[in-house]
Length: 241
Ligand code: SAH
Image (cartoon, rainbow, N blue to C red):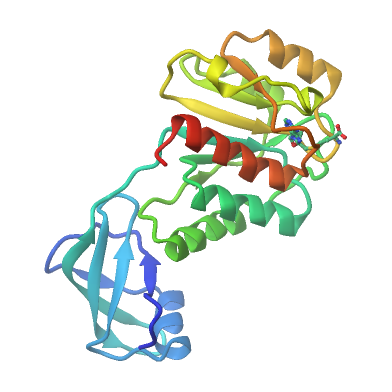
């Protein structure tokens, strides 16, 4: 086994002495790609029970099993922060999901807006990116990636106790900041598509009392950069950094 710590996200409950059967993909990865054998250790998490050291007890080509030894990290939940973003090109959308996971978003919600570039997403593929990012970044939590929903619908059903940080490119260079919001524990960030928000969307968002308009500095950022910048800003001011 190399120096890299192998971490896998599994669905089973985790506890000392428990056996975890491996999926075909995981068995292929561990035994054909990483060349692990019985007796080697990896680390597993499931988003609920922290991280565990697991020993390979069975190593087949398409099957295998792990035996859980001891917990190596407690469960760490991210702050209650959602990221709403309008999907852009495939690779950049993947990037947003990966970065949002690393940055500690609790939920990732693709939205379609008036100027959204892409009207379809592959939710399962994006969810797999979130899993991979969590495995790779040492996290114990995987944010759920939602189906694509329309911004106006989301706004109509919005839970009123959740504040929305509205990243508005029209505020470029302004001083509108997160500090202006009162205390709240539930939050969401909304990032527009490459074409930005329409005037109608901007007017509607600005009128909602749970919305805090925020500027991300004196330059217009691309949507993927804006997502990372907004998450950084929120985590620094209100989050778990
Ligand atoms: N085409 C638009 C820019 C869209 S940038 C224009 O030229 O005006 C994509 C998204 O990133 C925006 O909708 C916004 O949510 C966010 N964004 C980019 N730069 C920003 C900034 N300086 N302040 C706030 N939000 C920004």
